[in-house]
Image 1: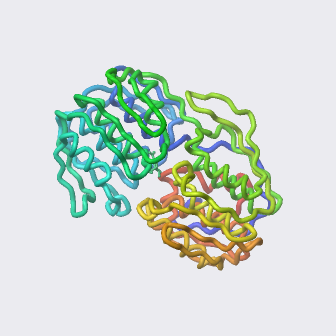
Image 2: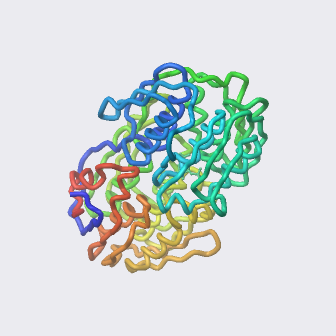
Image 3: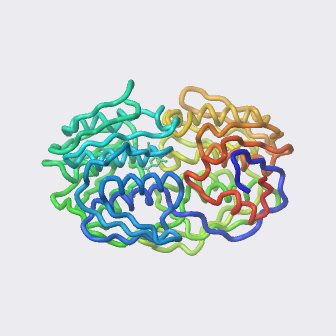
Length: 432
Ligand code: S3P
C-alpha cells in the first residue's frame, strides 16, 4: 500500500530484474512537441507520473487533441494553440511549467500558469526574462513567481547567453523560437541535457549544436512522428543505489536511457568502487539505452567536480545517500542550483542525513558528507518537502539503516515514479 507515510526498514538482499517508468524529461517533450506538430504523433512508453499528466492536461487545454490509449501509449494531434479556458495547472513540475511557457509564448494567445506550493516558490525569471526579450508580455507574481500570465505572439529572435547550464531555459527559448522571426541561439556555460534538440530534429526542425551553443535553423515547422521513451536513469538510480547498500543485493534495471548528459551518477558510483555493470547497449528511439546491474559492495568517498553537475543535477540526493555508506569523505561541488529544485535540496539532504546520524554540511555551494563505511543509524521521521527525489533517497537509506526511516508526504513520489514502492517490494525491499 503506497500511502502518504512510508517506512523503509532494514531489508534482506534485494534481487531481481526490473524496468523503471519512462524518462520524465522526454515524456514532457514528447507531449509538447507532439502538440506543436502537424499530424498525429504516437508516443510509446510515456511516463504516466503526475508531472507528465499535468503536462498532458495542459497541452490539451491549448486545444490540442491528446489521447491516452493505455499503458504508456498516447496519441497527440497538434496544431495552432488557442488560449486555454482556465488556468494551466503545472502541478509540481518546473519542466512542464517552463517548457509550456516557452511553447505558448510563440502563439498570439494568453495563458495563466499555476502550480502547487513547491512550484509556486520556484524562480521563473530564468525563462520569463528571455521570453520578455523576445517580445512576450508577462504578468507575474512578486519575484517572477507563479501565477504567471503570458501574452504571446509576434516574437523576434534572441541570442541568449546563459550563466548556468539549464535544459529548461534552453528548451523554453527554442520552443518560443519556433514561431520567432530572426535568429535564435542559446549559449550555455556547459551542455545541459539535449533531449529537446534531439526530439526537435526527429520532428523535422533544423537545430544546430556546436559545443554548448544551440541554434535554430530556418526550418522550424514540426511534423508528427513516433516517439519511444526509454527508462528514466533518474528513476533507475533508486533501485540501483539500494542494491549497492543493502548487503547481498544484486539488481538489474533494463532499458535505461544512457544519454551521456544524464549519466554522471553512474560515472561517480563507479569512481566510488561500485560494482555497476552496463550491458546490452543499444540504440532505442534515437537515444542510447542499456541494462544496468548493481551488486552490493564496499564504497569509498569521492570528490565530484562542478563540471559534472549538469549530467547528474537530479541525482545528488541519492548520491549523498550512497556517500553516507561509503568509507571516507565525499565532496560534491557546484550545487547552487539544488537550492531551487522541488525543495531546497541542499538543505533537505543535509537535514535528513544529520537526522539519520550522518555528518553532512555545506561549504559555499559544495556538499560534504562524512561517510561512515557502514550502515547509518537511521531512525528518523523526515518530510518529503513536496520533493519526490528527497522521499525516495531517504527511503533508500532506510532499507540499509540500523533503525527504520519514515518519510511523510511520500505521495509526491507519484510525480515521477508511479509504482515505486511496489516495484521496490518486488525486489524484497521492506517498505510499508
Ligand atoms: C530538466 C532539466 C533540469 C532538471 C529537471 C529536468 C529538463 O532542470 O533538474 O529535473 O527536463 O529539462 P534545469 O534545466 O533547471 O537544470
